[in-house]
Length: 211
Length: 211
Image 1 (cartoon, helix red, strand yellow):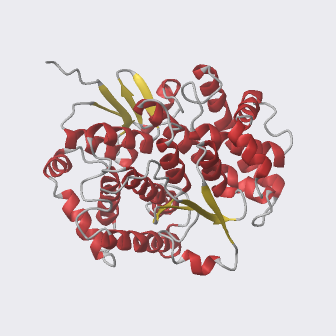
Image 2 (cartoon, rainbow over the protein chains, first blue to last red):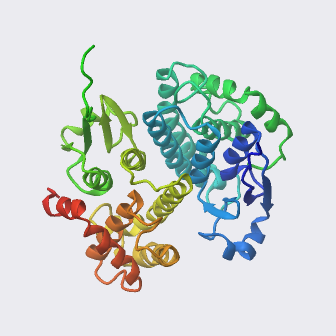
């Protein structure tokens, strides 16, 4: 019996960014894929081939799919990292959307703070980054506790929202050691997630990118 | 043994302010799915106390069998998935998700103009229109027209209505109503809204809705 796996191609930049959860999922599932990375200045040259002119884009047997959360949810459903009931899936979606709202808030000042976008570098941390962090991570700390401090943010098995939060914590604690010390259950949950063997292996061998 | 109820209809309660806003799409999905739900309007006075009872301190919140689901898209997708309104295949469902997130991205820019139109916040309306309204519109709506044309069924994805059709129809019709002529360059989008709003269950909801 030959099970034909689809051919997967993932197109993104030389970053972990919005594609890393998909990459994590491929590695966790042990499914091969083409990991295509472009420089930012190359994106205009491929823009016509991208459904919304943006990356990341997933191709499944040549069929294109844009938008990182749509990609993450699709792969998670295919590979079994999407929760174990309709209510669980809804809760995963809710946390993921809350996370997305948080990223929209924290990334612009983060990039200004790093000097990668124009703006007043010195004011970003106290005025924007820390308040955004506190608002969101207070919620996550409660979610982790109420879920049973079981190494997951939703349910009792690894899901794509675990990976979403894990990668975010990875990046922000890399740049700002101690950044999340006020949220120990979150850090403990992320440590357990990152200890998952296939994920740990990928995190150790993956290309080193800025974020 | 005891007889099992043939139709264990979940008790749906939707909590939001008594405005359309982020509550309208979940309400329309519930109406489209023909499911009974309690449409709970929280007043400004009730909100501070109710807020502390919600998972993320935000609304809308859907209560299903005593469990709370926040985040309007998570709610919409949950109800839609239970009632055949989320695409016919996993890939179709992923495209519904991608279009929904693309709309959210558009709205994050567009609302810098549109909230002023609706009377929220302060600012120079004409300046916001030039800086945010028009660019956001002209970046997003050509993609919508492209999707409608290439899908060719009158719906955004597949050959039947999905929750993202409801999202787009509410958004575009609201904009066209509040800023007359603003979408005249995108007749296909206005046609799409008319088609979706002509669906009997939605038509009935719109005619009877309190706001």
